[in-house]
Image 1 (tube, helix red, strand yellow):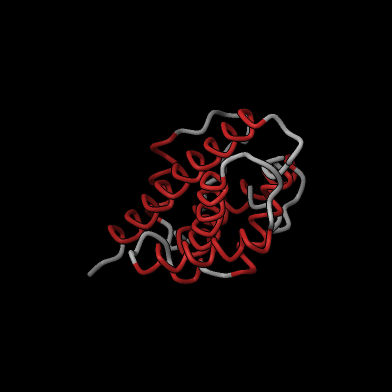
Image 2: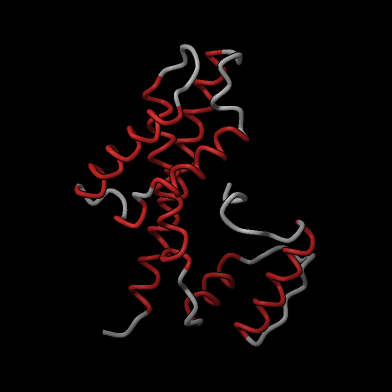
Amino acid sequence: MLKFEFFFAGRDEFADELWREFAIMTGRSQDPNAPLDTEEAARSLNESDLLVAHLVLRPFIDAYRVVAQELVNLGTGGGVDEQELLKRCLRLGRQWALQHRITEESVSGEMFSTALKMAHHRGLLDPEGDADNIADRRSALVAELDDLQRSIGELARMRRDSVPV
């Protein structure tokens, strides 16, 4: 989802990099072909002092969520005026930031523009596409981003719980 925000290695190379980082972070090696034990992964995260994904990823996911909501709000008739859509996203983003639904760092025309690139890539702005299909895929994107926001919230809670007061 964040391919327009960050540069990632190819899938296999990226997985190898993650396992190397895991070994550095935990001092333990892991067979990349073995199933990942969720309890071991949670313990490794809790033992590390590197639980910062919520700080790094939240603004991007929040901005994408605003764009996804505005795409749903647009309905499926006709083309999309991207400049008008960006204005709507800025308004909604400011409102949600004031309501503490998203971070203030998320309210950025640049972040919304990148989210639109992702929407283009997923065919969510195609005026020639099947309206019902586009509506379903836009709603699916909202649900996917809601799940990511919940996961990021869980990481933030894990970090708060692991930091001594």
